[in-house]
Length: 377
Image 1: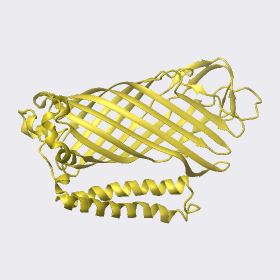
Image 2 (image 1 turned 180 degrees about the vertical axis):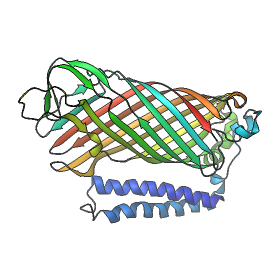
Image 3 (image 1 turned 45 degrees about the vertical axis):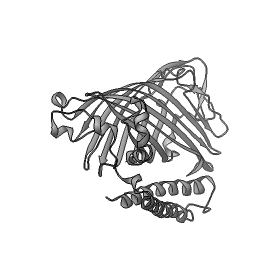
Image 4 (image 1 turned 120 degrees about the vertical axis):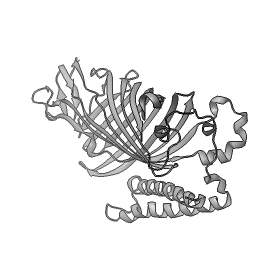
């Protein structure tokens, strides 16, 4: 793909994402279109106009400065270790090739915290929910098994899919009655079931080294050695959280004859919105057998019309941030394409739903080690 074609593709994707987010903000947060059916032209126009403007703008930039989209030699290309097995080493985590798959299985072992920052609160009509801190509910740790699949169309562009399950069950004793979803839970033992909490992500990824190399190659020789040789990547996509938060499978002991009801479950997934997400990654060889990988991503929406109705329009606010620092071990002679991984992560997510009937809030913070296995082929 020549520089102008690559620039047009990058511009079309970037513009479509920006246009989609802008149109969604106008429709869901500002009421553009005035209704579900009349808002469809706005939602269609956003990615189309954004993609056209982005493709044209980036194409003109590439014509003026073609070096921005021309692959530049990088430090890791020059200093990359000599590997004895050429077949598996062709599929490189740092320097991917066209048609390459990167598949990772991992588990994140999270400590919930800090303090009372993680909590759930569920209102039903005028019955305000109690702020139930995870530590009070006996939820001190979490397991987050995750699958990542990445496919490289060429050495620069990739599509990335992620699936994650979050297990945050716990057991505790309520020392006083607590309101949840209109019910008044009675004091005594309570079980926070392993929640139905699933996470889906779909992203477009782009290696940014051609751009970075063009802009900063003349400064690379004066940089400290630890700042050289990084492969930098950008990520744009959508994430969706499916959360069903229950106590004792929705039938926890309640105070008899309380008029608010008896159900102790809340389906957060009914109001959850797909979240526009942006992220960055930096990857680098360290010596002959190790690769360090750092990444950060985040998303945010504030008071968007969820297009659902419970006693009135449900307004959704959601945001999250996730960061990882990982170390991969590479030994093609012993392990072939498999690369064991160990690392550390920080994760924060919050979701607020507000309508005349519902006022539901969930905030969760976790941090801890992670281990996994990457295979490239």
